[in-house]
Length: 177
Image 1 (spheres, helix red, strand yellow):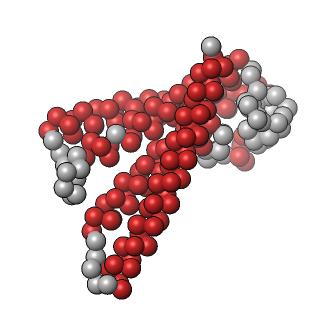
Image 2 (tube, one colour):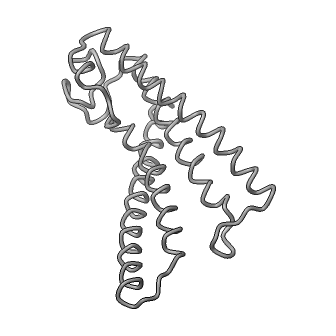
């Protein structure tokens, strides 16, 4: 059962990262169009600035889970690279548990923010786009990040090797060299 959950989280994480990459590409294209309209046509389009900002939020929230799943989040390599055995495993558990805690807080607060925005009907500067649509990216990304961190914590406590990681790799579990 755990393996099925792990596969499902992996697939969702990869799909979210691909969607995040698409958001980054669309953001780039919109900024290029905005520059052209502003400086070549003399017709600035303020809506593009808002949409580009939303796309950056989408990119970050959608890519965070895959980055964690690949164990590519920022780490203090000067310290963790020198640790071995139990100390290294403990550092990875502490780091992953910290990610899970932050993701849980983001999930809770994101849901509260969405609920509040829906309740009072806050809209964006773009007509007919409720703010909660944009804010929904935060709990969605945080929920996926939390799921990835929980899977990793189970793997760490069980001593299971990360899928696709060779011993000694940055992706391999600590203490398994």
